Length: 276
Image (cartoon, rainbow, N blue to C red):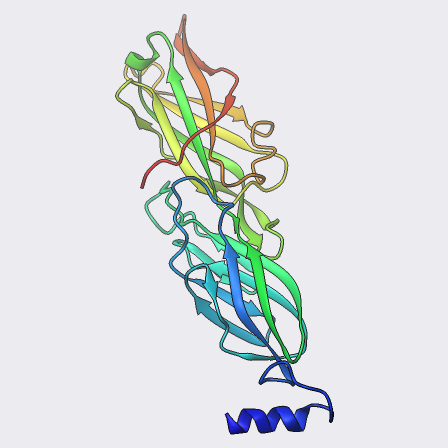
């Protein structure tokens, strides 16, 4: 206490009172993280990283924390992000690994970022509130098998192209290059097929779903169909907290050589997060 009073006395101009016990520095007495912009059923991460430029970095938990550090007065670029399964952060780039786990596994962890510029004044206590943004969006794909397609089709495989692997955590924009992911379609009790993937976003303006249908009769054994999803996914990088569900119908048509298949136009609807 005596030392704090002495520092204050020596640091302040004669006749001017100090407002704090740290007249030459600023302190963040309350860093508040606002997690309201996250999807239904998604928990606040257990912990997250906070970086005040190159000056200070720490790991925090909860929504409100005092920062145990005295900051030199100045402008600070503040970044926040949480640790999430299959996502790595290097500098200002966050990258999702779509291949480490079993092929097509969609359970990339929920990843959030926050960014803000603040000026920390000396001899002052600061409260800073930062809005966290969800950076992973879930895509649900549903294929309804019409007529006798349920009897003929024994399996569905797919590849989705034009997907973002990395984003800039300062602004959430995709960086790097587009990659492909493998949605895994599983047959439901109603005979239709669904697949779900969690994605960083889309990259560029061309997204294509290539679907391979396997048939029981072997004539033909497989049919490959290509669907352009560019229009349906054009706004995928916005409103990431809301899952996007795309539905379509697979039609099987008999022909002289056997039969062929087509996928009708996709329709959009918002869905709920599929439980882990």
